[in-house]
Length: 127
Image 1 (cartoon, one colour):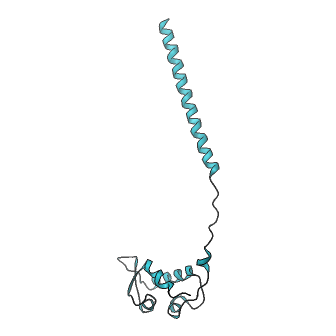
Image 2: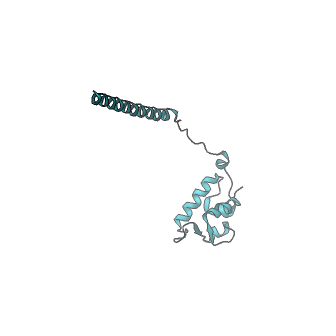
Image 3: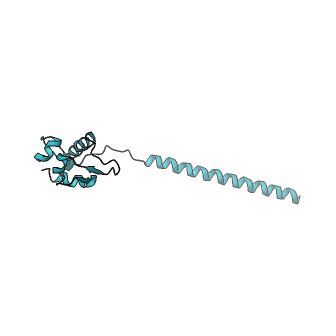
């Protein structure tokens, strides 16, 4: 009888362990579904009004970009198309721009400008 009691106790202990594991798995599954429900829908990002305001380029900058008032973002895009078209980006250090005659005037006489420094120089030519 002692052997039967031990096997019954072992069987009960195993049954308890398996039920605990199953309930633990169910709890984690509930957490995953809860996260999905709380996820918010992404809305379209709105452009900053300051960037979209048309600015008039100076005569020096107008030789590259055009004379019409355009937003600051478009000025940067047009400058990059000009730089890539004329292959003015440094081949070894890609963050530097080697200025030609037109860009040299915009960059304040510098022949080589960092791409982050470029926006600072261009801002002086927009009003």
